[in-house]
Every structure is written in structure tokens, then in C-alpha cells.
Image (tube, rainbow, N blue to C red; front, side, top):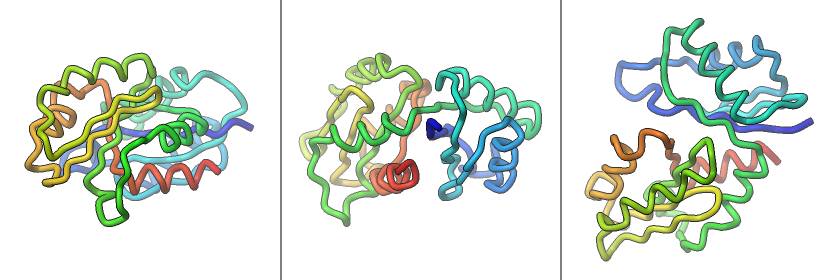
Length: 177
């Protein structure tokens, strides 16, 4: 049975868009997804589905969030193979102590990743930026809060995307197997 990863954008940051992970897990199970596991408290889950396109699953999850939890946020669903592909294509060597400074951006449609090339002019010399097939990668050596490129990625320019740090992406890859 195909395994998918669902990534919610902008939940459990501050007081807005609160999504308890137990409620999120129950919501996914109520949609007929099986093998549901959540990761951390930032809107990450893995589930199995008998079929269907990732974009259709994203619409289903988004509608269920709005209806059941009154939360309206972008939802991205990727096949497990896309997460493994994102890990494999990352050409930025990152030591373990820098995993939190490497942002990985995902889009529902992989072709939209190319749109992130627009933030390249904001990348400073100490930073590294790569746009791949499955994701875009921004390593903020000086820290995420100091990076104009990260601000753009996490802000309005990046609204069609959601980001996770490298440590979280690696954990998601483990969950999808």
C-alpha cells in the first residue's frame, strides 16, 4: 500500500492554527488513511492509502482540517518516494550539528520548486542554496533568523511551499521506510 507524508504549513507556531497531533492523527484516520503516525508538533504525519493522487489527498486533508478543527492552512502531501528522493538529491554536505540550519522546501507540485530560484539573489556568501527536483535547500550558516533568503522562503514568497529542517526530513524518511 502506498505511503504518503503530509506536511502542514504554519501550524502550532504561536497561538494561531493550533493542531494537536492526537487530533490530527484521528482526523487522518477518519478520512480512511491507515498506519497514521505523526512526527513532532509541527504538522507532520505519515499515512498509508490504497490509492489516489497526492494532490487529492492534500485537498481531502485540507477540507477536513477546516471542517473539523477550523484551521485553514496549506497542506502538502508527498509520496514517500519523493521524501527519499529529496534526501538523495541534497548535494549540500551538512554536519549533524547544522541540521537545524538547513531548510528544505517542498511544494505540492514538484515543478513549482523552480519558482524558488527567485530567492537566489537574497542568498549571502556564507549561505548555500540549491534547487532540486523534489525540493529546494537553503543552508543558513549564520542562522535562519539572520538570513534574508530564509525570511523570503518562510514568508510571503514561500507561501505555496512548506519547509522543514534537515533533521525533520531525515526522520520523515525513516518513517516512510
